[in-house]
Amino acid sequence: MFERGYLKSNLPEKLVPGEPFPEKKEELSDIFWRFLSSPHGSENDLTKTGLKKEFKKSDIYVPEIVGYPSALQVFLQELSDGEITPGRLEQNLFYGFRGITLDESLRYQINLIYKSHKYILLADLPKDSEIEGLYETGNKHYNHALELFEAGKFGASLNEMRVAFTSFALYFSKREAHIKTGLEDGVKKLINEKSSLKKKKKINVLVGLGSGHTDIYHKFYQENPTAASRSFSSSPIVYTASSEAVRRSMFSKQIPDRLLAQTFIEHVLMSQIEEQKLTDDHEEVERVLREITNQLTPENIEKMSQLYKSGRLDDGRLLKYLRSIGVKIPRINGKIFVYRKSREDDDDE
Image (cartoon, rainbow, N blue to C red; front, side, top):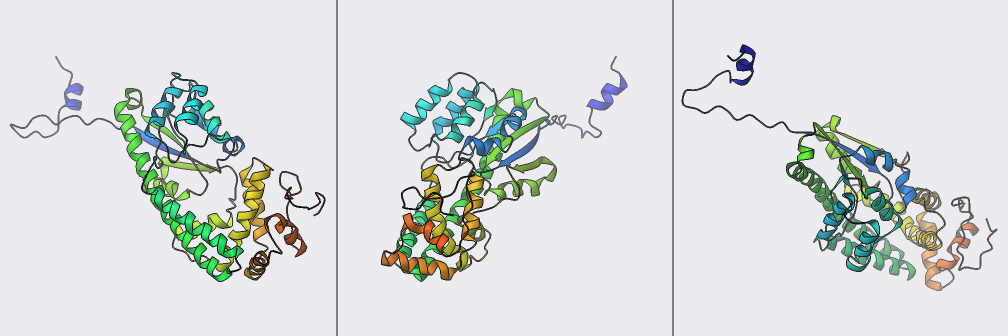
């Protein structure tokens, strides 16, 4: 004999004669999105976010890798399952996937993933995505703007740089929309295919993104505030002039001429810092660049454009010139920022 409780809990309250019993709905897992935002050019950038600790708590890990071939998703999962070694994957990246930069940041993540038995998802733009064309267009305008600046055509260079950032903004907007869809569809697909995930009541998805991609988190948070959280490697975030210009354009805000002008000087100084490898802390680099460029007015920079044209100023002499007009140059990683290929004295402050 069935107990009343069993009958009561399993029979529908109302049943129309001739209709079948309603199918029992499958319970869906709760998905919790955890976003870690930071620069991602070095191991130091990633460790500041607490990636290692957050990774251990995750069920699915989503690294930010743009321009990847479809085979990379398979290789990363094999790496996680212990079927291939980091060395083998690095060989595949070096010999087969020349579009992927095997930098310190990616190498750190490869070692973290190895034998972790986490599910790995790639949600960014794949190789040969049409959206990449917008970035290439932006780069053409950006490089042309730099040429105009060095030719002393300051007004035209500002206009060209504005066009460049408009194109970059459209690229990032479309890319972030692609990432959000890729996250949602990719996680659902993994849950449907993997029985171990299907059984879980709560699935933790860890998403690593650059600190500029804040809008993706905001959209997940707006849809369900209790199912999304984020943390930054440091606070407050300091954006470079270029990053701020792109973000302003993405959110339909005007880009002031002063901000556009500052990007020309920032471009030169960023190249010099990277060339000399003064630090592996990219947040410190961004802070230093902003401290320098914030001291400059459009008038200062227009004069520099004319000096470039006349040959009295070039990239190698830029830092010395900035100091000569009273710009304070912060130290980087405790070191005096000088350009080694110039004739500046290391003690020149």
